[in-house]
Image (cartoon, rainbow over the protein chains, first blue to last red):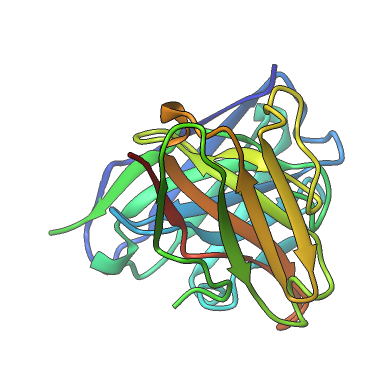
Amino acid sequence: QVQLQESGPGLVKPSDTLSLTCGVSGDSIRSYNWWGWIRQPPGKGLEWIGYIYDSGTTYYNPALKSRVTMSVATSKNQFSLKLSSVTAVDTAVYYCARTRWLRSPFDYWGQGTLVTVSS
Amino acid sequence: QSVLTQPPSTSGTPGQRVTISCSGSSSNIGTNAVNWYQQLPGTAPKLLIYNNNQRPSGVPDRFSGSKSGTSASLAISGLQSEDEADYYCAAWDDSLNGHVVFGGGTKLTVL
């Protein structure tokens, strides 16, 4: 059974960089899948942040592209998200998820982690 | 403002059939498959329908999806109290080098 688990600070200061990691078990990061991040502000809908492939190829949300960096750590079977220059509007539950190939749905999700941007 | 448009809310009584619409454009629903997710309160989204009308293993056949042109629909028949959740449509959008777009979500209340 594929499982994903987000980890990282729950509180980030405005203008700082948000950093999260997603640990994968039950599947290999190098298994030809794409790995993604989605976020959900409190009481609001889902917003796609981006995808990464194990080769490092990425697709980012055009609205966030200038602030997003994703990376893969194959030796640790995990992938990461960095979002720079955060403000209060970046407060959200951040989910990591797997998709089998580009354009396909997210079939496995992490439980999500709440990140609050506040001083 | 979400790229895909869904009604904010809908409701039904147990046993009824309800539908949730999702409207897009030629760059997303018009040329790509639609997926639907169910989000129960306090939990992560779960894939409910993929490739317009396919159900993952374990999803009851009470749930069905369809697509026509630049719109899609999710139908839930034999409504049950445990179906009370938020439902999101999603699709790949070919514009701006390609990206995923979600609908704003529909809150389903079982009366």
